[in-house]
Amino acid sequence: MPAFYLTFLAVLLAGLGARDQVTIAGLALGQGRRPAVLVVAILTSIATATLAAYAAALMLVQLPPPARTIFASIALGMAGLESMVLAPRRDPREPTNSLGALALVLLAHQVTDAPRFLVFGMGVGLAGPWPAGAAGAIGGTMLVAFAWARPDLLATPVAHGMRRVVGALLLVTAITVFLRQIGIL
Image (tube, rainbow, N blue to C red; front, side, top):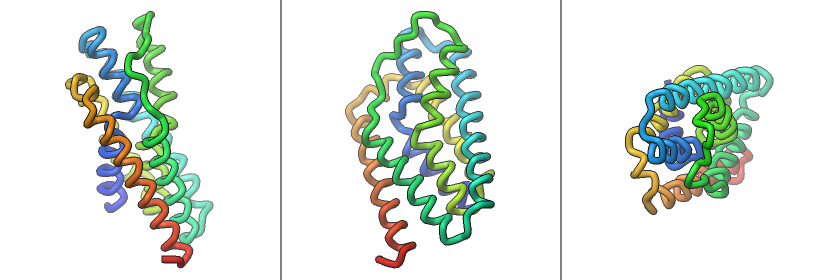
């Protein structure tokens, strides 16, 4: 069960102020809180977490145990860099109000965001891809629901700073895990 709990906490922290959350918050502020937007966001979040868990399950059988930890540290580092480098766009430009277009945009955001990297890396590193995927799906659902329900909170300077701080912590954790695994620390 550590794969579930650790991934759940990591996804909640890394997902604060992520691109999908900012997109949902921007739509909720601009168009009102349409329930269909929330449903699409939840479905894409579940789909991308499942995809990350599936990829972790495939990778898990190919890597020997020592390499799993190194691979997980690389995924953690990528999640940290993504959180620190990629800044979400404030106002999504959605001229069509199309739920299909929203689903594609959210899928593109979520496939390459920090929480899905964490699901992938933690699933491999802790040898629990499906518990990590379940944690990612639940955490991702909570994050998009929060963005839909309270879009005003994501526009605060604290939310922007928190994303950078979490990214830095993920990067430091990744470096520490990597150095311990290769025997330097």
